[in-house]
Image (cartoon, rainbow, N blue to C red):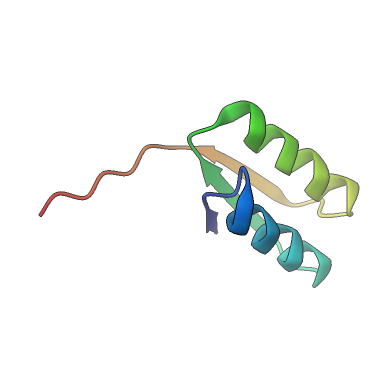
Length: 60
């Protein structure tokens, strides 16, 4: 599972895992950008890709 996968380091990490043949689950708050990441993953042949939209809050 890669968080923050809609862009930046998270997206690059998800794409790198896909290049290695991993099953990738991606999550982010940005739906449209996350959909683009999923489309890129699938175009690389990552057939088993899960997309999760979520908001995570940490309270101390």
